[in-house]
Amino acid sequence: MYSGHGGIKTVPGIEWFKEASDMHKSVAIAIVIAVIFFSYLLFFVCAEEHYTSLYLYPESYTNYPENSTVSFIYGIQSFEKERAQYTVNIYVDRTKKDSTMYELDPDDVFEEEISLNIKGANLPARVRVELISPYNRYETYFWIKEPEDQTSPLL
Image (cartoon, one colour):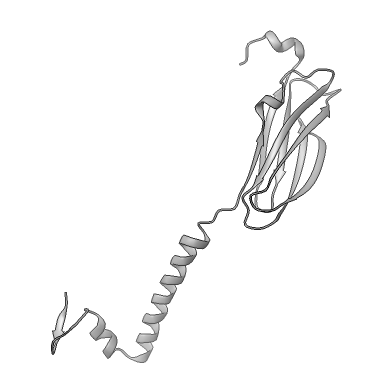
């Protein structure tokens, strides 16, 4: 693996580098620098994911609304790299019931309780929370049913 020259041991390839032209040396150095740079990008910069969590508290809502009202608590947690602006849209089936904008810093958590009047909605209906972030769109939902459906088995 090592070759000796007058008592000095050298690594194979060093001889090539010593004898190479300036252009070949420049290309070799540029390749080494590029490999180091792209390794840094791959392992340190790209490894930092940015995303947002959207969630519902399951105990905060019922699938059988009373008095044409449905209430629930949703939450947002930001794992973005910088302050981000979010839009939250609340739907009952395809009808938008509410829309709000928020700004959150990284690692901030925002939670809100919502009460919706669902009078006139055709049940069963899907209550959907849509979150639009700078990079993605997220959604979560739950179903509401007629109170008399309470005894029927879930399918």
